[in-house]
Image 1 (tube, helix red, strand yellow):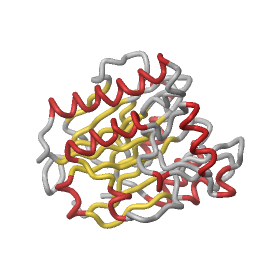
Image 2: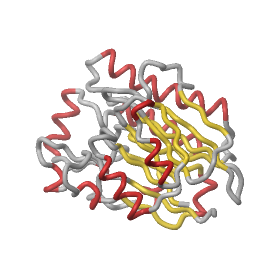
Image 3: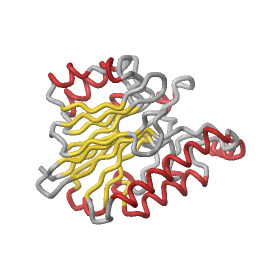
Image 4: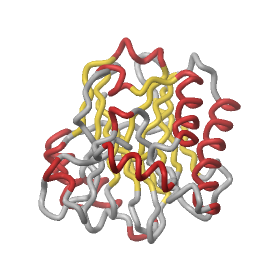
Length: 267
C-alpha cells in the first residue's frame, strides 16, 4: 500500500502536479493539505474518474484537507479537534489484510512566532488536541498512520538553512524548530509513533520537503523537512520504502512543498 502526503498549496493552482503524482506514483492513499477550496468546488468528479474515493474537509483561503483512497473506508471523521473555523483535520479507517488502519491527515498551524500569542497558542493547542484525541480514542497496539504538514523541523538534521539563520530564527522566536514545538512533536512520538522516514534515514541531513518561493530555496537545496508520515510502531515490520519526491517540486508552477510517500507491504 502506497501512501502519499502533499501540501498542495491550492488544488486548483497545482492540479497539474496532482495529476502527475497519480500518474507516476499511483498511490493507494493520498493526503492533501492546504487545498484552499470549498467542498463544492473541489475536483471530486475528476478524482472519482481516476479511481479514488474522495473525502474532503475543504475551506477557502489558507486551509482545507482531503483524503483520496482506492479503498472504501469503514469510518470517516473530520473536525474532531474542536476547531470548526479552520479545516485542518480529516481521518479515515480502512480494512487491510493485517487489520483496520486509521489514517489521520492534518495541516498543522504554522504558528508564526512565539510572540504572536494567538497564532502560536493555536499551534500548540492543535498538537495538544490531537494528542488528547489519539490518547482517548486509540490504543498503542492499534494500526495508525499520521500524515501531513506539521510545520515543525523535528531535529537539526531537518533544517537546511544556515547556522547563522537558525540562531537568528531562535532569537526572534520564529516558528519551525522552537523547543516548545519540538516538545509537542516528541510527546506525540512518545505515545507510540515512528517518524518513519527519519527512522530509516537516521543520518541524512540534506533532504527537505519545503522550499521558500521568494529565496528560491529549492535551487540551492535550502529548505526544511516539515512534512511527515508517522506510523504506529507495529507497522514498521511492513516497511518497504519511503522518500521525498524532489522532482515534483521541480515542476513548472509548483507548490512550495514536495510530496512524501511511504510503501507498506500490507495488501
